Amino acid sequence: MHAKSPWVFLAAILLAGPLLGCAARPPASDPEALEAYSQTNDPLEPTNRFFYQVNNALDAVVLKPAAEAYRYAVPRPVRNVVHNALANLTSPVLLANDIMQTKPRRAGDTFMRFIINSTAGVGGLFDVATGLGYQAHDNTFGTTLALWGVPDGPFLFLPVLGPSDPRDAAGYGVDIALDPLTYIGQGAVVTDLKYARYGVSAIDERERVLDTVDQIKKTALDPYATFRSLYRQHRASEIEAARTDEPRSVPAWFPPSPAQPGTR
Amino acid sequence: MLTRRKLLVLAGTAAVLTGLGLPAQAQAPDSPAAAFVQRTGEELIRALSQSPSPEARSQQLLQVIDRTVDVDGLARFCLGIYWRRATPQQQQEYIAAFHQSLAHSITGRMGEYEGVRFAVGRSAPEGPDTAVQTTILRQNNPPLQVVWLVSTGSGTPKIIDVQAEGTSMRLTERSDYTSFLQQHGGNVQALIDALKRQAVQQG
Image (cartoon, rainbow over all chains, first blue to last red; front, top):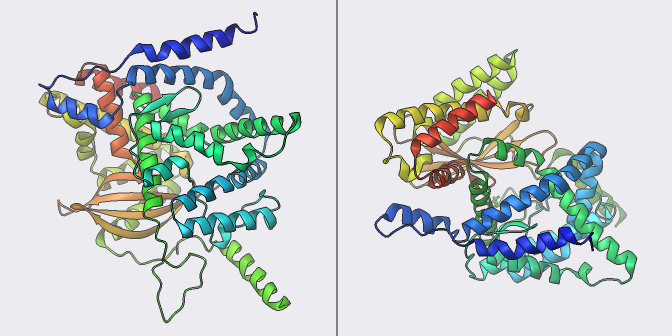
């Protein structure tokens, strides 16, 4: 009974949060402020700011100390190996999204990276493929939805998951459903391993942005707005990179022929 | 068959060793703006590597920044719709505070750029300005794609924005400032005071 109280508290704030309400829409007499309001596209700002605070508090006591301990205890080459292994495990989801976006070049890169790094890279521990010209890229079902013409919707700051929007939040769920590892195996050990993967990958990602996040929190006057802007811009550039990927250009690893200068 | 495979492995190893995926270091700049970015980058690296003391290094760095970056224009851009709402005196005070804040955030991160190298890539017109692509190589870090937006309108080229991996510095800063101002009832003086407070804290 006593052990449950933090969860009751968490459930209470999760339920109470959305009731905090919406950002006040500026009056029509102030067209500049109104334009800024619609550009920001954050009608749930008070709620989002509330969850930003909650996540910050959780981060300060759980994820950040874990990431700092990880950085302190594990040398960089080993952390790189861990990161490569985790990245290699996401290949099936990447490939599925590359294909659904009808991007043969990117799908080919993902496929070759998976084959090369799983074999020559000793089960994904080393990223041999990048040196061979198969560049890594990120992909999510959120990006797939964007290329299919689904709009992003208002900004959302989700508990635990952080900055998002309805399109990316839906994409996150679909990516989990697309992951074969979600369905493989059974039994307590496999289940534990699956959770361990989520845990390690959260610590790995947090460790990689420790300095950047500290820097932003130190220099930004309104860190929430800064993270909101960075998230939006980052997603827009990822989507643009996927959209403009040129399928017919010569791959980077292909030897250039002197008679016919390639586009790269 | 065996020799062919051996050759492929050899070629692969050579590619790994020489970093085939990276853009060529010595590529001729394809526009005046690209040449300007090349020059500026070399100056910045020289400022970072040659001076003996950290104070002299940051001094030199700021001199190069002042000469090559349109800091006043950047400051005006970052204030967004509030620029015209500020009094002339506030505008001046704000620009001074912005210079301070930029100097602090640049010299504060100097350590991250030890042993930095860069390669200038393609440039393309973006509206009246030119966007110059570069790849920044730092030790122990993946290569960073950075686009420099260069304005040539005034005759002398000036950097007006830096976009790292698709995120624009001036857009991020503007949304930081305008959001702060929205939280503070559009009071530009509150922003100036906050910038000054920050400079004191970090200084």
